Image (cartoon, rainbow, N blue to C red):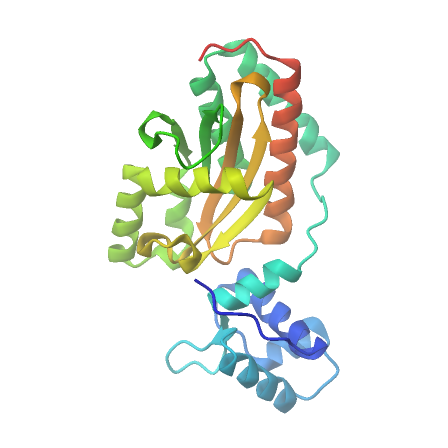
Length: 266
């Protein structure tokens, strides 16, 4: 789990946000010169280095091996996510595309499991991350029988594109966990109860296999069929500003779709 948050000065918060977004963009350690050049923070490189050192002492940043640059810790990502404003940036054209694909999938297949598999595949293609969906549970809760819930998982090959998963042992452990599905089912079922949209990072998942991952989860109502969950799974440095609003919007579109189309085979 992430450590308790310390209060940051506005400058420290700006630097931390800059490091997180620069690491998301580059995948590498971030130095003071990059921060000054990229974000035009009006202080010297020495001041940036001192502030980055303070952020490291507080547990928000770390530096890998001999590199002088820093990367975010789980606590750094958590601070960034808790203080970020994720405006709905999904273009209207993409909303219309999603609506069309939902309608087309419904016309082709009204068996709910197959329908959700197609939606999950669409979500994976849109985000270039692993797409997930959990079948509807009429009464969401941890007392649901995990075995009876269908988990759709699409886009596994996307994980091979990420530098974080080039370590064959870590990749093998992650793929084994994804294949078994029980850990993901438990986590997604827990998210159904907590909030409409949530982002979990690293060790927050309480599973060693997922400690290098982030999961963006969105809940939707499917009327009498219950409550469903869609999600994407990828590296901790996924582009949250684009993907969090996208997953949220797809869930909203699915809820609106289920309101209008109630004739599914379960």
